[in-house]
Image 1 (tube, helix red, strand yellow):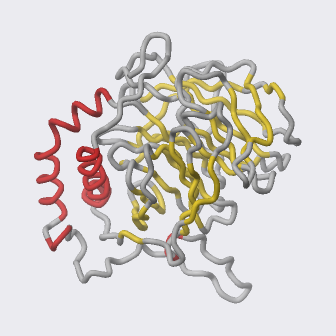
Image 2 (cartoon, rainbow, N blue to C red):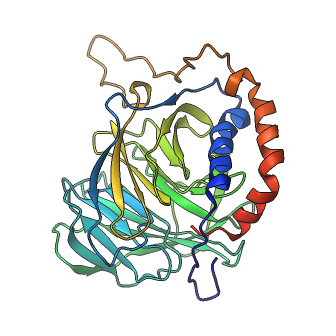
Length: 353
């Protein structure tokens, strides 16, 4: 729970409630958008543990971003109550460099994204100070833009700060992502009925930028990321991940490994798999391959244009709109909501990150 000082007290959510959240989160995107049913897909070759974060200073890893220019480097940062540092983690889980953002405030850092500056080829990091567990305690939230260092050496960096407010009122959020094709920034709120919010095409530093809702998000989303080629994006929840072609256009649900408190997600550099992590000391980072339909499409040949990937069809024989055991999705969602709304509403108000 946030306070006036910006510190957050972690409130652990009971497993039974998280299970209800997971079921509801999987159902909500399909019912809210009216798209065809998508399969809950597990990768062909399965998830595997890549490494554990060995740095004792990283006790609340709350975001992941794969470096676009330094092979094998993954960036992370702590949640609220820590300083404005990002950590460059190598393939063995050990910190290669620590970067302090000298002109930034770490009020409630909840996510980090990476992109590439097309003009210079340099990597760009976007650090999202967007947590708001007090339901509108902050008049605005911030995202810091940092040019990725050329070398993996400890340094103090300066960032460009962009301030934001939501067109439809304050939100608690934990997901940040950048479309590599357009450079547009998106925020994904963490709510009972969350949303994907688009930033203006051109960001301003001399005024507060307005975020506008462009689509729904699964219940209690904890992170988000764009594929390296911009063909899709993923939204993480406590128990699973959902891949979308565009806001509201679901491709597939992807089963995630069980984690203590699932907080982060990112694409690998080739876009064929996801990385996901958790809070806690010595926290693990897993690699989860994507189902074929959610992977980047092959480049078109000179003589043939590749077909646009389609949403994954359900393999159980269920028709579009069918839910678990053949129950219509809308009925299933209403049943889950009625049974859990009291508990979830209380948790959504008090839950930390």
